Length: 280
Length: 348
Image (cartoon, rainbow over the protein chains, first blue to last red):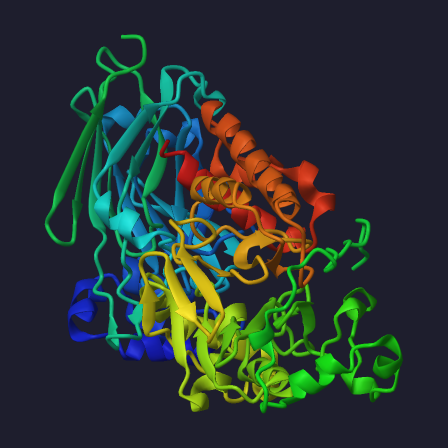
């Protein structure tokens, strides 16, 4: 992707959209250099984690991402936290260096996340060739990271909506699935679930040339997932989460495996859903 | 890239209805009339090289300009390169054409740059001096609309599906940026987005003077703004990208919607169709079969993956590979098609 239009989009963000996303936009994202020109991670690291140091450690966390994305607005990511770390990890942050809003989301895990291998799988927008990072925070305060380079472009500024009317009419519709028998969750007591929420996830970076205005940002601010009333995770997210947010996750099976989901968007609308386990 | 399918057989024109007399009004001797009058083979061979038909298949009906084939009486179509946009093709990588009536011309799609649009404009002017009353865009994609600017000076009305304005407006900036990069400054020069203003919500007939063309807006299929154009006089249908030939289809709307629209269209007879990519003229409904099959294979295999709790990334690596040899540009678009189909079908 060329730099020109990208930079222009950011600079011409209308006031409202700017306000809505400003909290999520790290100042270093306004660098005009491309991914290959300059490593912006040191500046980002400081913006996101302050003076704390992030250490690359793939024995603590791994990240799977396609080297070349099929669709920049729908790039699948899988984060795995091995069983020996799971008990010690409370937080996971996903970062896409070159995105206008580099922090995809902050996950906070609860007791129902369990102690077997922990898996989080979701889909993100990638706006230009970029490093993608998964950073876990351990209970003794260490920040450990896995990094993958992804070739994709235009995921944030391109309208992902293939059918705008259908997407808007359907916003908030939720599907929650228990993925029984999922091989990746074979560890003792761990199950796999999936939550899908219809939402256009407007990035605030999409220009409507008829009106000359950017479509205001409108996206899911948070998603809370519980199992039997106990937290599996809460994610606070931004515009880098793809349209129709979709998260697969491991959870610890308990006496009540009902999964409940509450999501809130930037308009303050709340969406809820619940799913009883299969066959119960 | 090598072709691995037999050459396409062009439909015969022998069974066309006789030309109506008003096709050649007395006193109007434009270049089209002159050239059509000189249509015996010997006369054709005497034409300068640039005016001979570009392809053997179209020798049955001479075209006065090498850029287009005359696929039916006064219906012309250009075969775009089956390729992505490059400096070499200057954005000439989609089919387009025009229909000439007694009083006016309708252009259908304009190519991927102002330069390509200008070539089509030149071809129109080699055929007739009649005004270009309409430029009809079959959908919002840049390879079909970025040549619109070449027709602006004619006072032409730009026509499209009622959802094309919103779709194109929200993508315009990005389309221009990508094409500027892919074509380079020289080929891209003068290119801009011209958004249709006559928006079609229900089937509509446009009159070119003794020649009616029927416009049909479709529900979400290839995109959410697909429009087809039927020339009632010759039974020729410009399908836009609702049909791809040779070039792998690209899903930017709804795979299920697309299959349904293809089924509807396949039940409506046509003497010939112009697909959005591939040959400039094809038989119907045969032209719909390979793409309908491709979409069905993707849908069936993606549904199986979803039922088995497989993931999006697993699907993009394994679905539809049996179709690989049937299409050009498979590697460029197939993964994205599977990705789009997966995101749609997992909500079933």
